[in-house]
Image 1 (cartoon, rainbow, N blue to C red):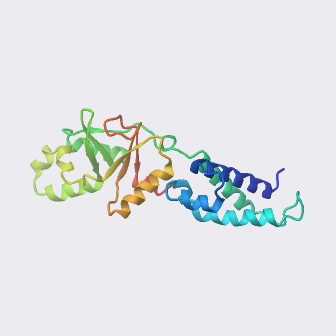
Image 2: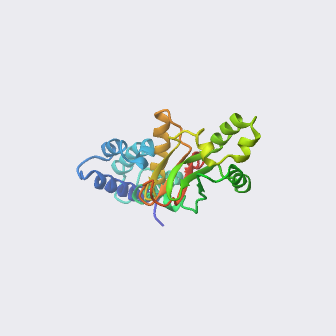
Image 3: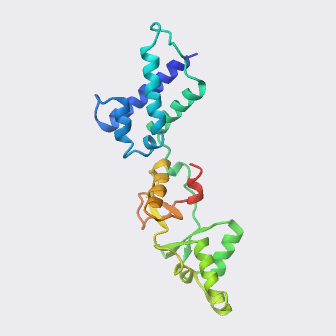
Length: 229
């Protein structure tokens, strides 16, 4: 059975090696590498404070050993489990395709509003991708539906004849972004955060093979999904 200090140092060294590999700088210190890479790597950014604290703990374990085989202090189980999770997330990041790929229900621009609302009722969907054949036209959300209803409630004939095209007129055109199925879940979370920082609250990320709009839609990450990451 390995001691906690041994497990901690093993995970720490693997992270250290991966940091230097990402930066192509073998001589850079651990803490410095964390600070540099946190600007571009979503996983390192997420665990930034933990990693800097672990650097101090590693130094305490290594430099305060009583002898080669005995550490002056053993990290708690939760600390060891935490650094091992970080090591796994960094060296083998979980991609969106392993968590969010699924058969996506799509609609055509001339589909009736009645058809859309039946799907919303029966399947609980709130993000509805709209196409003309294979050409993406926009994303309908529950907010867009509510705006359309509020503006059409006095015209029963208009409601009866309405199509997805009518609702799209009440949607923000920038309520979505396309991403690659290879993107990590933490990078996806950062996309939502960055857009909020720009004053744009996304409704969803639309997943295709390489992140191109003209590719087949293979998954959706909603703003609710991202809160669970």
